[in-house]
Image (cartoon, rainbow, N blue to C red; front, side, top):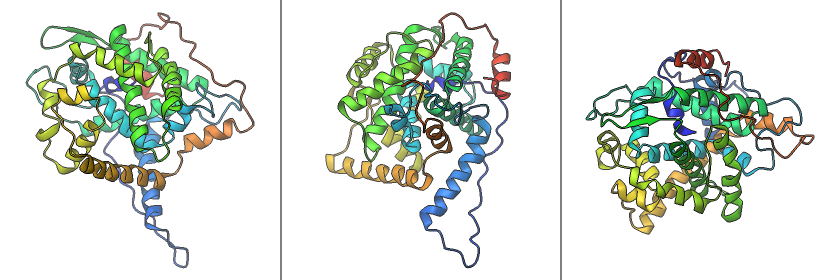
Amino acid sequence: MSSLATLPRRLTPTGPLRLPELPVVPVGSLVPLPHQLLGHWFNQFFDTNVRSKFFRGMVFDQPAGDPGWFGPDSATWYVHSHTPALIFGLQCASYLERLDPSIYWMGMHHSRLVEQSDDPAALPRLDPDGAATRLGHSLAFFIGTAYGTSDTAERLARTVRAMHHTIKGTRPDGAAYDADDPDWLRWNYATVVWGIATAHEIYHPRPLRGADLDRYYAEFVRVGKALGATDLPMTKADTLICLREYLPRLSLTYGAAMATGSNVTDPTQAAVDWAIRDTMPRWAAQLVMHRPPSPIERRARRAIVWSLLNGLRATMGDTPEFEQARRRVAAGTTADHTESTHVPGSDLPLDRTEVERRISAAQF
């Protein structure tokens, strides 16, 4: 789940982000259109900074006929195929998650995303390398479990469970947190499926709605169960109820407050922050004192975000993983889908050092 934010600070060093150069067009050849050049550049960027580092050991093209956890006719294949909307949805989920002080402090104590601190008045200081690592792991997990083989999905889930088992600690106010807590796992799962589905519903050019969107909610419980969560909501309505039931446990930490709303001064970051807050359920928006603008302004703002996300999707095309998965099942599948074979309580105990070593060696 997007609690992949709690993946360790010390994995294989990712190094600085590398920006590829735009391709040189040979004389006499057809000149690519601007969006084609941009798509080539972005795919190179993704290959260099994400795919080559975080997709190692994942299999998408064989064995033939293996449907994986979802299969080609699933709502999940459709929803996750829009990579920019998937990324945006994960950011929406992450925003909602950190309204839980325990998750906030899990991130402050264990995540690569920020510089670690025990100071309750500390502002989260973004670690750029850590942020890239977090994004890479998150995309690898949600693309791998969607399109990977059954074995790939199983191994990814096992890795995240192993990391969850190591994430325990105490908040500055003395409250203990544990990433294996059943209530926390259930709520964390709800934030993820809600974030991805909501981004899809608002910004996909042909979004699933109603019963079709509920099919996505029902399918995605396979991921939540594989990570150890139980009693999971299976519809949009039930997911919203699950999220709101957690409200008495939520609050706005100083660090989270300083990273949103009028406290964000960078124009680009402020625009992204607004787009995320715009997706929030009413009670969550009220918690961060967010008020939507007039319907006309809101529609205009959403139109800009829609154009950016879908323009980026058009330039990228389908991911290689999606194309490989489709070839894997082109002649049919052995079943509609498979499910995790994980038996709760059966994981071998691993310390954090060993979990990190296995991730670095792609032995997930």
